[in-house]
Image (cartoon, one colour):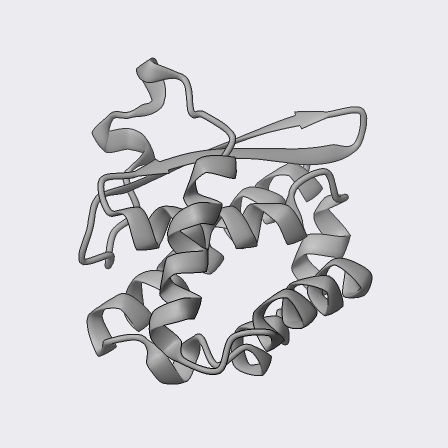
Length: 136
């Protein structure tokens, strides 16, 4: 997971301006694994996000796989980054990882307070899924 986080940091390091980083995030939104239409419901909606964000997870062969969607394109890019790092990992890996790329690329420093709260809510939900699967 550190390798993927380091790749993300390197990808963002080519941009000097945050507007360029936002454009890159918007492009990443297209890489987001599609969530099933039946999971775009209140049950999968993340509380605490300014925009609407749905996250689902499935547990297969000891690993957690995430899908998500959002009605905000920058948020879709952010969740695509989280999925890139966390999806396909064991519950314990997800629970114990330090998502250091968020600070390293300057994401947390350049988000509005409401979007920062949404980022934390997305991470919390992904870790809650991992915790639920770990207890099975």
